Image (tube, rainbow, N blue to C red):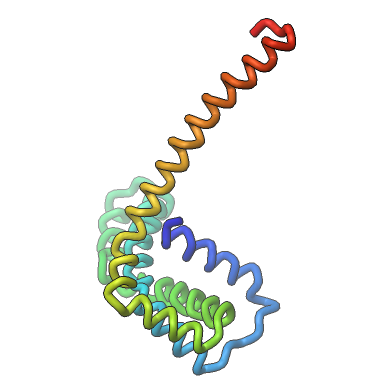
Length: 162
């Protein structure tokens, strides 16, 4: 499964469960933030924010060229408009990890992803997720086709005309 999907699902889970969740220790949050840095989640969120702002552009600018120009300037990459959203996402995901894993587990996970095999997994995870999803779709389609034929044959043997 794609890391992005997992992170978004994790953030949503945190928002839903946030009211009843206990605050994590500063040490757990520190370990979780270090893991978030190692996983390069901020880079992934930075890639998502421009897409969000692009979707908001027509709503905010209302097809007015003067507003569109200023909107583009205000939302340019590197703009401080991203900072609160980026900080919020990172903090929420770090809190989710801190609540989901012990400090020792967080350190072990971070250590794995800091090693060459972990780095390689991070680099290839999106491509692997896409390829895995395609394999799942292909196998499901083939299985559905085969099952359809077997069911039709079984029903024909019972006297149904299909």
